[in-house]
Amino acid sequence: MSYKIPMGPYHPALEEPYKLDMICEGETVLDAKLHIGFNFRGIEHLAETRNHIQAIALMERVCGICSFIHTLTFCRAMEGLTDQTPPPRAQYIRVIMAELERLHSHVLWAGIAAKLMGFKTMFMTCFEIREKIMDILAAISGNRVNYSMNRIGGVNRDITDPQSILKMVEKLEGEMASTVIPIFTTSRTARSRCAGIGVLSLEKAVSCGVVGPVARASGLPQDLRKDAPYAAYPEMEFDVPVVPDGDVRARLLVRALEIMESCKILRQALAKLPPGEFHTEGEKFNFITGTSTARVEAPRGEVMYSVSWKEGSRNPARVHVRTPTFAVMPAIRWMVKGARLADTPLIQASIDPCYSCTDR
Amino acid sequence: MSSMETIKNKLGIPVSFVEQGGVHWLALDAAKLRELAKAMNEIHARFITITAYQLPKDEGFRLEYHWDLNGQLLGFSFLLAGKTIESIYDLCEAADWIEREIHEEYGIDFTGREYEPLLLRQGETLGVNLRDVVAVSQEKL
Image 1 (cartoon, helix red, strand yellow):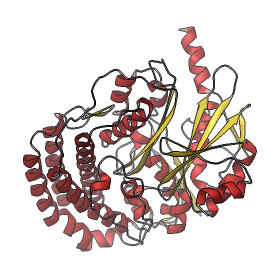
Image 2: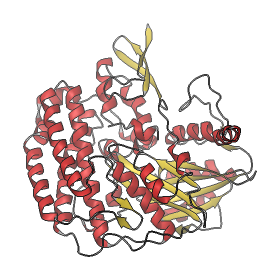
Image 3: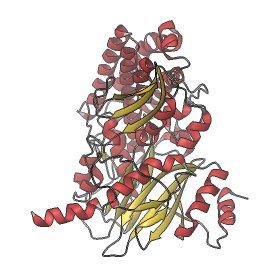
């Protein structure tokens, strides 16, 4: 006999609003339905009532983890409407901030995943490392979460002493290479809890249009930093980790390997930071009539903004935000099908869902 | 033959893509939408999203569909005189949530599919233009 188990809207793993109705037989999940929108904020509509400076601050609030990425994508779209090209130093600072944010996001996720695996010592190690990443972000921007770094035509703050940031990054890389990475890639606990569960096949990954680490963990080698490079990424050498297995362990491995690739990018960007201005001159912009679209590879995958403006208008006519979790979350239905009920919190957490982004 | 030429040939249209701000655009008749979705599947393009624009006065809506083809961003624009367009959900599973979201926010009906509430809770009216509802409630204030 089958029965329905509702999980949420208070999520047991991530303490955020989202609901999964699972049809079970015994301990096995037969099917599931997802419900979002419990905290929908109408940010896209709100953006139409804000000028370009206010709208940047608003877009920073779409997501608490990747706030930099959202303003980066929004500013890149608006730069297309104002014919502004950020100077090379700004492009490098954008890469540095984006990769620090990726480290922050992946290490935070690793901590939560460790907690769900029953590996609480690892959870504390990850959160200790995360604090150090936030210290670097605060040293650059002055803020721990919403960094206020992006502006149309560049960034608001310079990195005046890249060598000191480089030393902090190298120290952090050493700590991660000796703790988080070996445990997640070789430990028996991680393997026994994650291998073979929550599988998303390559075919389903393609049909669901998933993005980011979830796509790469199902064997799809897609990453906008390589496929459609922006900012200073064309000048960086790095690999895109791809694992074909499609299970929770593959998602864990992809993120662990990406942490090391982000450190590689950070070392290059900090060492090669070009001299010069870090933003274009002036704060008044002439927006042309039209729509501009920009995409960026966020820690969770592709973010896309479409911004529409009417010449002479103070506010955008339309802002559309496609967040990575919005693309990935429907695939949870296929990941939990056939899984044991006890594994479902970890399976759901394995996509690193951002409910704030989804309920934008 | 480039993938974009392939798309053009599959749709049987004389116009070419126009590159603007890093997006390759093509304006199409709404009747071509499902043919387009099939062509995108055949060339293994990845569906990204649909963006809805409400046009001034009673001019209807503009829908922009985006696909990624090996890092190239493709945009297809459709003008809707009314409030209906065919759904591509059966051809493109990734379009499910965004069709439901647009239906709930703008009242646009993607024909040929069933709706379940996505953002709104059960019991609330689906398929109304929330923008108009907000505008009316603001006028009352």
